[in-house]
Length: 473
Image 1 (cartoon, rainbow, N blue to C red):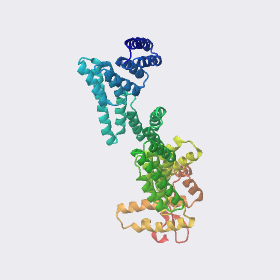
Image 2: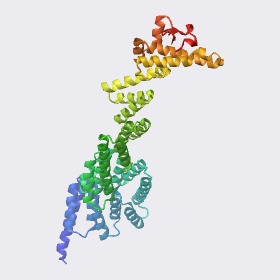
Image 3: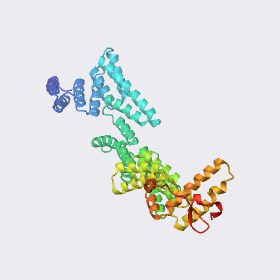
Image 4: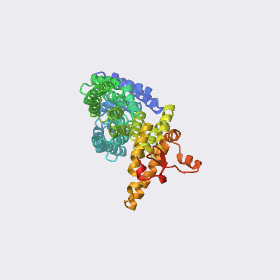
């Protein structure tokens, strides 16, 4: 043991350092306060209050792990040091160890049951434990929004808990809020570049943004830092498998092996339902395959699935709109092209929209091609032959013995057939009809409705009123 005058001198010196530390603490100059409390500890390392003061300073500097060590030293030196127990509990709580914090606050309440600060902090610790419990249950239910809510509440009481921040960031990534998730993970990595959990979240964000190669690099780095990091291992495996399957599908598609492409895209979609952006592309790719296989309904369904995952995916809207055009569902096609043009006002998109609008307008008129039973590319001879056949079929004289209802229906069909032939057999009228012009206005301008001709036995066309059944060829 040192002589008394030596130890007494050190105590006086230590008290002087402590007083100077207190003065800087009051001025909120915590760095200088820390330096003087450290000098006090060096001069007299068995004094609990010096460690307690330095712990308080470290807490103000947000260095809670170091503060926790000093608080624990303080209570080891003096088990009745209430401020030491309080500070240890607050450090545990800030770092997210609510169970240990609760024990510390309980110790204070044993020493002083009426301590209001310990009572409140004990309630805070209990609340954090409850938020943890709720978050765990909601994560299992995949209710990630509720997990984020619970973690925000918990972080309000445990502000430096990396575990809570990582869980929040992971759920933000799973919700598609990648920028927020990356921000949280990056903050942790600035303080601890070897944090495997934060590296995993950074990789997860890149993976979900379809930057698979970069994502794999982060997963591999996370596994270097934490070889047992199971989430990184699984994500790395999924990322590699997804990339390989997608690329294989693209390759066989380019070789026009559409059945194989459909199968491979389907297998890729089964790998990870959480990868929204990549799966949206896979659905759209499979929709393209469906169109190539002449399965428009299937293609539309896949494009719709892609849009549900990513409602900004222009390529999926364009593919679906084309499928709607192919099956003559023009209203749906116009709706998709309008969405595209609102997003990207290009000349090409404007042209596609106008084309769909024209087809929609045309679809609402009588379809003279259908009336005659010919295709839109039918030749003049094909149109004449179709008319002759239908004229014979629907001529009113053929149905003179039928009921009045049947006669009326056949007469209506015969008239429509005549209108159709009048238009489609006239090159000018046919061109205007194909371009979507209103031919009724043309007819009104001429002062008479369409005539309804038939093919007569002498090889010419005559109005309906001048023919009988024997005249129809």
